[in-house]
Image 1 (cartoon, rainbow, N blue to C red):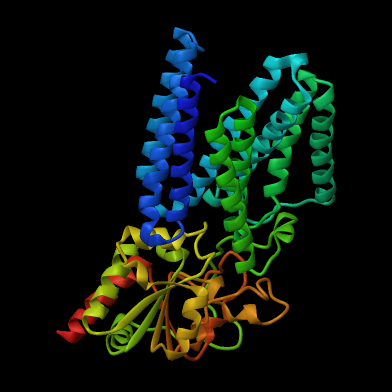
Image 2: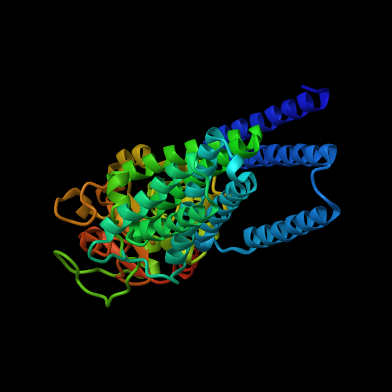
Length: 467
């Protein structure tokens, strides 16, 4: 191996080390930003090394350089614009689209390699190539459907029809079966059928999954993207891609399992058809077992200002209202009065893994105040006021009873607090489409308003109250 080749391999190892270190730093909110920076540095180094290979070997023409540079500029501009301008409520859709782009790009690498090699493709190479094409195709179409469901372009309710599972199995059998056949008998015509089967399976896999399961689906598709990228790395012999893809695939798979466990559901059940129906606004009504009690800003402020311990429970409603800065300001005001304030973070609160962590980090909420479910649940019984902001299914005591759509799902024990204030625009359902029994608990008071408006009014009322 030449000195140049050795140098490139060493650079790739350094880039891979950045990926591993960055992923480790992303394990906690306190170091996540630095982890992102380290991983970005590794990617820049890997891209620079790849460009050095292209220049050294003179692999592409002037026209090729123009096309590549134009693609890089356009892609970078779109990525930067999307990342800087997307609303926090739309972040899951953006992640899904990034998954689609990653999976689609990996699939194109495999398709190009297979068609270029033609009859000369080896069995060893064609295995990774076809895995790349199949996994990348499923990820591309599945991620687009997931983004559409989250955006509301496609209904968030499960979409099924009689015999849907049989159709899914047949499509999967066609894709995998033809893929196996193409390992020993190359055919670009049959490759097109494999691609079509992968794309159809991606659609048919995600359409029956409901909105409540979307956080798990996003994690799973992220794992698919990483796996497809790793396969593409094998196809073109790029070790940085192999390592980066393997890390994303493994971390995505682990996160998928953790998210499924947090919902007390198996991945198999989720993939065979979820239960969510999306947010559904309904008229103000009593709900199961009692009446709803509303509260004014002044009354809520009295409870909060004179409490010793307050736990804030953020949910999708907080993200929808972009009220993270207002809740941080209210928490700071309460802390200035000596109130012990913390945040209860449920693993599936919001629409993607870590949604609430990212949202609150944007408002510079101190990381030690963010408590995971297992850590914070024992604290509710010692809490004076639990302030629930737009969180629904993750606080519903119905999960403790059999026979409901969320039975067995671990929840935040909000109903154990001495007093509960729920900020919500209406009595609308969460993703699971069932009434929240917390709302009719005698200890619960409902503050019906947009989260940003309600939190601003609460802060003003607390300031007035304490002078």
